[in-house]
Image 1 (cartoon, rainbow, N blue to C red):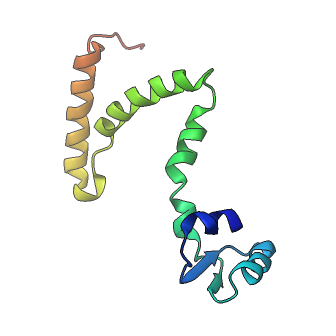
Image 2: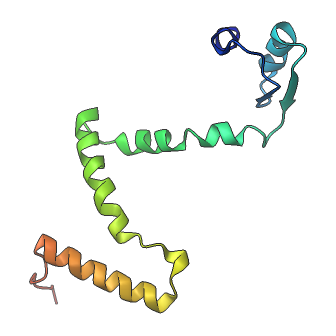
Length: 119
């Protein structure tokens, strides 16, 4: 925490942390004049900012190298929105129609329209 405060070069108005006991001790030693808020839900904003990174880490499982994962994820990031219309803006009928259209486009692009079905 001391390193972080040196880099900031200014004193924060409020310090928000989770309930780790060592934060309270560090706060009293380094910045006793700053208000320290330590509550279960207050730190959620900082924790949630790491979610995209955590999702990428989770997606990395099963790949042999970071490069292979990056290649796959860069392609997937362009394809996946095609199958995720903004559902909250559509009625159920419109959503079904939209998905039929999108799957027909996908089948045409990938050339899977004429595959036989197993009966």
